[in-house]
Image 1 (cartoon, rainbow, N blue to C red):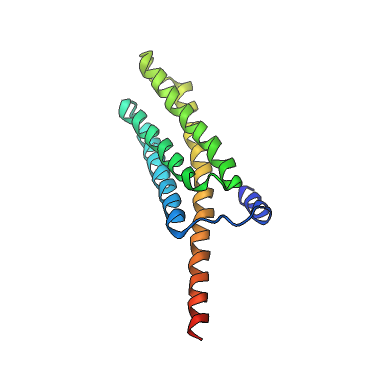
Image 2 (cartoon, rainbow, N blue to C red):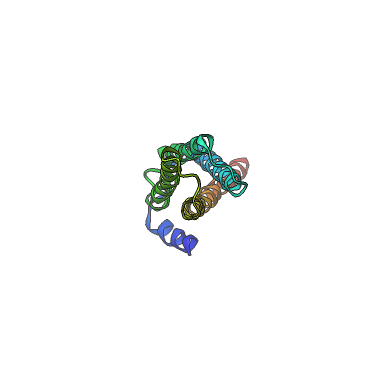
Length: 151
């Protein structure tokens, strides 16, 4: 469904205007965020719950925000990434609260944090796919221009 929205919004919104380097950087930051969040989910599934995990979640938030430096003018990407930042921040805040209050990981907190991480990943993955498809389109266009210039 999200990719259908991308298709509709792509037609309405003007071209993104990112350079190849900006596009690559945006994708790279999202891939890093995705990798970090997946590692955090796996760590939590393994019973890990500490300050280091909080810092990793914070690092993933920063990676998404660094992507936004390049994509902030692309509204349909922003509509996904801004709530994703909120989900990551919620997970981080819940973990910090549990640590500060010395509650340990409660069942409810575990499911809430895992839900936030899953929602964040669900927002990041389609954005990676969308931005990556632009990289492929740009490479195909460059190849076509080179072929035309050679004629």
